[in-house]
Amino acid sequence: MPPRHLADLDPEARRAAVKELGLPEFRAKQLSTHYFGRLVRDVAEMTDLPAAAREKIGADLLPHLLTPVRELSCDDGATRKALWRLHDNALVESVLMGYPDRVTACVSSQAGCGMACPFCATGQAGLTRNLSTAEIVDQVVYLAGVAASGAVAGSPPRLSRVVFMGMGEPLANYPRVIAAVRRLTSPAPDGLGLSQRHITVSTVGLVPAMRKLADEDLSVTLALSLHAPDDDLRDELVPVNQRWKVAEVLDAAWEYAARTGRRVSIEYAMIRDVNDQPWRADLLGRLLAGKLAHVNLIPLNPTPGSRWDASPKPVEREFVRRLRAAGVSTTVRDTRGQEIDGACGQLAASSVDGAEAR
Ligand code: SAH
Image 1 (spheres, protein in one colour):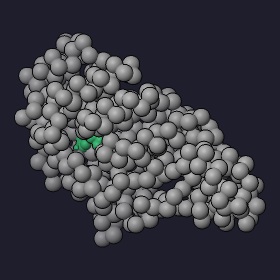
Image 2 (cartoon, helix red, strand yellow):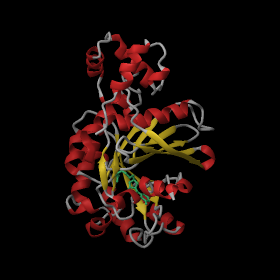
Image 3 (cartoon, protein in one colour):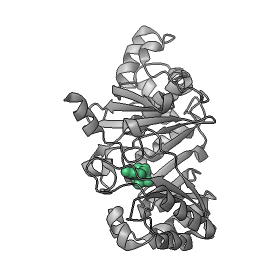
Image 4 (cartoon, helix red, strand yellow):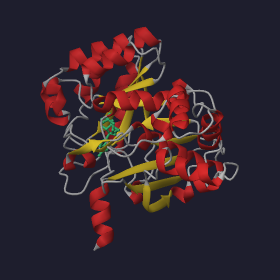
């Protein structure tokens, strides 16, 4: 794990940490105001702190967690990807997406991923380690700063949404992800003050963790990466299905919806001739009809070496038509960041870095 950082701590622990450094307690709030309120991540820029305090705080509470390796942009500057090196040389990526009415950060919760979904680039490399709470939060604070600088043309300057859809399985790093959500949603200056509803936690379907999340008293949006309505196929596409079957994972999703009143987002990557048949649309429609659910179809982003491709548009349209006919609200996700390998399922930092080193 990396050194501890302000963003790992709740406000009480921040006050205690500042006191341990021999500084007056009010410095804790001052630091939080800089970091969460003004998005200042570097202690050197906190010039209203006495020099001696700055040094102590920098070493003890604001270590550099993310070293930028490179930043890429596409979609006329509306999509940006940042590649980071962590203290132990692990690599992770984050993506910022600007729209006319909102700016969304897509962040990583783990370096690599242990879930081994065969169509996902991150899944191919395996898990390196969990990220700390601050390593997650600092991605968001950095991206919020980019948005605030006006760098995302045609979008509002305030970052308003965060999706845990970068590298990793957030519910496999449960306590740190929950703490990160609390930092992101606590009112400023304790946290970033984002709305809980504007945070999306996406999971392969770790049922016990989904049930725990329902108990947290958080109204974050839950996204479930379903990708197949039948166990035969889902066992292959999302291997954790061998442990928790479609029926069980959907039960946990409906329990989440009932507890929070939040519509669950069902993620479904459209893979040509694999999961895009009309009968699978009908089966999915039957499973979801009458439930508090919304289907998000994601055109598959083919990953290097993959034998799979995206479904043709007419097949996709028929799939949408059948789901809607079953009364299930359905949209197709726009594909952002494809040219910079920043699109859904393409984040695989080690290969990106390897390509750069050659
Ligand atoms: N581990 C979490 C979050 C990370 S991925 C999860 O699986 O939900 C975010 C979404 O992108 C998931 O729905 C995932 O299945 C999807 N995805 C992964 N690889 C993809 C690809 N190559 N094309 C399209 N979507 C992909």
